[in-house]
Every structure is written in C-alpha cells, then in structure tokens.
Length: 404
Image (cartoon, rainbow, N blue to C red; front, side, top):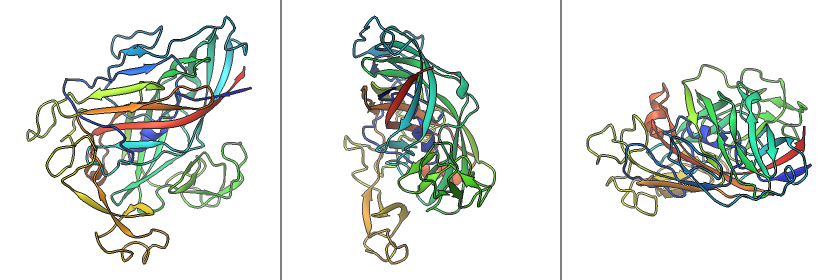
C-alpha cells in the first residue's frame, strides 16, 4: 500500500463556496469573453470535488493531453519507469482524503471569502496505469455524495451544502511526480438555516471518520439521536455525517464544475461584461455576475482587499459573527463566550485576474481550481455572497493507493 498526494478530488471546498465562504489568496479580474485559465501540471487522477458551475477556464493540455476548449501547459515532465506505477500494478484503487488548510473564496462581494472546506472527507476512484501514467475512472461515484454536508456561515447567512457527483470523475495521474489533472462535476444542494453557529447537523461522539462504524449520534437534523459515522470535519463548526442531514428543502441545486482541478497553476482573466452597465466591459468572470467587487471605489488592488472600504466588524475567534466596530467584547465575548473581541476586517475582493497554485507531491499535495457559482433561490444568500459569481479554491490532500 502506497500513500501519496491527492491532486484531484477535493473540490468539496468549491461546493462549499456556494454558501458564501472561501479564501482569496490571489484574485484579479481581466478582459476577454471567457475566463482563460492556464494550468501547469503532470497528468494525474481527478479528485472528487464539489460541483460549482464554472465558466470553462482556458487551460493548456497536460503532457499527453489535448482539448478543444481548455488548454493545459505541461509541467513537470513525466517519467516512465517501465513498471506499472513503480511496480504496484496496472489496476489500482486510490482513496483521496482532504487535509486541513484549505482556502476557499466565493462570490463577488468578498463577504464569503477566506473560508475553509471540511477535512477528513474521502473519495475513492480506480486508476488504470501504463508505466507511471494513469487514467482515472470515477464512474462509480455518480449519484454519491462528495464527503459529508458542508457547513458555511458568513455575513449572518448560514447554509448547509450537500455535494453530489453528477458525472464520472476523470483525469490523469502520474505515480512518479504525484501530478494530476481532474474533471469534477457536482450538484450542490444548498439549505438555508437559522443558526449561524451551527449550519449543519453534527455527528457527536464518533472517534474515527469514515471507518464504516457509526460510533456517534446525530445531534439534530432529520434523524436526531440516530447513529452516525463522521464523514468530514469543519474546524469552525464541528463534524458532519451523511447520516445527519439538514431538515427542510434546498434553496438551490447548483451545478458546480471544478474542471480543471489540478496540481498545477490555474490563472483566469476576467473577460465577461457585468450585468450592471456602471462597470467597465470585460471585468466580470461569470454569466449573470452583477459587478466585479463590492469595494467602495470599485477598485480591487494588488493586496486583494478593498483599501478604501468597506471595513467589516467581525468577532476575532468566530468570524461568522458580525459586530460593531470599536465595541471590544460587547458584541462578541460578552454575548457569545469564546468569540473574542470585535476587530476591523478590510473586505476581500477579486481583481482582474484569479490565480491559484497547486502542488505536485508523492506524499502530499495541493489541488487548485477556479469555478463559477450560480445564484440560489434565496435572495439573502445571493446578495450577501455575491452570486452569481466566481470562486477559487486551494485544497491540500493526500491519497492511499492499493492494487485492485
């Protein structure tokens, strides 16, 4: 059994973005009529990720790959040892697990930027290998959930997102370098809830995620008190499970396309006209996007924060809680123990280019993707998060592969 970096399935994060969470490490906006993404990677298996409908980025085909739309730039060069995946065999099974440290940004307002996806979520696909080069067969994933429900909360709007694979996960993976490119498409069901501190029902007491043992209990949701197996962990909100689902009806079934989900670099220029005529042509990323950002002066500088406002008041230890600037602990710690003091937080923004960098690796790696997030049927989510709008994710992950 070999453990190696996962560079393909964890778009879970992307889906999450729908709810209005994410983190902006390098965003900008630019011109053209379709976002153009340039990625650098060696082929690798796709890792499951949440489906957000994204404008197809232009990417350069990975080594040995070509496409009529996205263009991928090969990097690094693949090597072939003459043995199938370093002697492991031509038919393998790979399980990808998301790691802590993800960075998710969604929507044009910036309110839902700097969020995180769940870690310890897993996805298993098949690898068919010749030498060190493998193709990914994730056809068995169609109709299954990617990880467990994803809790997101920002700007006073909490949501619980359930991500389901709508298409087979496909792609390429190189055993020697750990580089990969993936095609991941999901449907993200968005549930608007009431408790900003508990967007999804929790699975309490289960010691080991994804072991098939229902050692915990659903705290709430459609089956309170039912046994549960943790399927993913949010560092902000706790452990969730597909045994503990949210009540009510979804307010959106969003198509999310994380293609390409890559260990290389994705770079997309803003190229679409915004719906609002008040903004320059070619400064938006996605169909139906109203404006490029919510900066007071309409400018997102190289710092990717609105330097001339707005400034948001947030509780230091629970940034999903808003507060009045300069009130110290009055709106935070004094009311919600553990939330800390009120801090001033400059509003994040996307500029004229969005770039995210993945990382190849045979022990651990990082996946990156750009995507578009459609509007939901809830005005509160759309207005707060800035939907329709762009999303970007950086997702650390690792894998274990075994013969099948």
